[in-house]
Length: 614
View 1 (cartoon, rainbow, N blue to C red):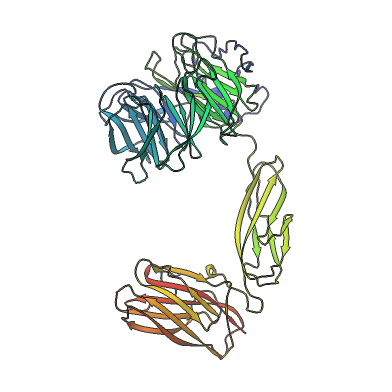
View 2: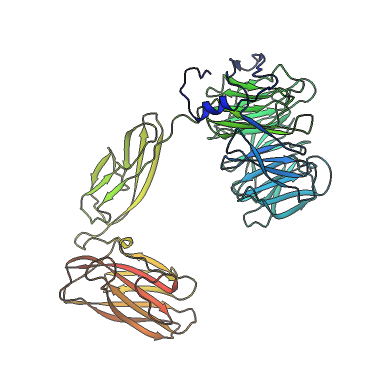
């Protein structure tokens, strides 16, 4: 891949201005044997790292935080936070060694939580340090979770920490959803080594060394079930399944294989779009340069694979055609030995940890990313409906012009109008034959074939019953859940609804209450006070239709009632000069006094209904 002649942008500036002066061997690519389909091209001309930082301690694994501007690096007794927002000047900003563990080889981050696990092989104590890293410069230990087993590797989601038991080759699922870690269950096969794991879309991928790579369904964490193996340990040799990761849509899987000291191993690519029928695609052989040159950890982003190869350096392959990977970048030098290659900001830079466990320098490097940051950006679907609450038979306009595409144009608009009708076009019109709620979905497609969908509910009222109002056009009002609540409202027999929602319910559609100027209607309210005394109920009607309740008239339904469960009826008068059209009535059940129409968070409940004056 060549960048000759491209105009300067942040990425090209970083790649040139951040080069390391005096770096050792620059851009060594070696010659890859053509065993599985990998080919080699010239590495990127600006192959030097952008920057690096020396990290005291025994540097091991590193991960990029979700924000992309912080990396976390395992060191012997803990971890460090590294600010990588300026890749030319990565800077250590925090260090934690407060668990009492040693030989910590792995850290994982999810959102604002991080785990540091160990010891990686032998020693005590063993377990998981569970940290709050919402402020990466000041990580706080939430809990030390001690285990009876050592932990070489792990994976963290927002709800579960997956910990490898080195001794039994089992995986332990730890609930961290409440910040109080507790074991859910454990699972394993009869095997000697479970080295590493990767979680994606409710599946845990498990590198079982000579026993292959297992796919485990963990959608029900308390009862994991095995889907199968990407490949069995005996189906391809040598095996040594050391690390596993996938592309974004979980169709391409990479198995990193490790063999130290002799006969180094590379990376296999597999098609796992059908988890029950996986297919081998290609193998990337290890580089031919470097003393220790087997694969270690890797990453897949935007059609590119980033691999660490110990002394042989870091490599990037274009795997947009996964059956024929193409090398597009590499770097080795300075006596570095890499355990990590992971994207930080797509299209800008990736990191590599120069490990100090087996002979490297103990650094974190930043490298230019030869990928383009993901290519096409998908469109975003959005639409407007007018009128927002139509009646049966009324023409409704659906307008998708609010949809956008950040780097191209939208070429297709497809509508599903919820009643079996489908239409095409940026703007369409339709009418409904029956009152009810309809889910309308718009799918837009851009000029690169990417698509996006969005949906909204359209509520259609009875014809002749007037148009429903949108309660959100009035100031909000709500009660406080957990105590007294409205059981049922009966508004002149035209709107009869049960809520029991403990707070608020919108009954403005599809049924409406039709009244006459100068007339009246009956409102019956049934409620439950949950054993508390002193309840009040009233209704406010915005007869002037000004949508702010500033001149709304109040009718008392009952006052200071102590019944545990009862009903009351009030007559609501319609002003002689009430304008025709639709407006809002707000019914309130309150505790210890009447509440105004826009009170929120008070004890009781609020129900809204539509009143149509004819």
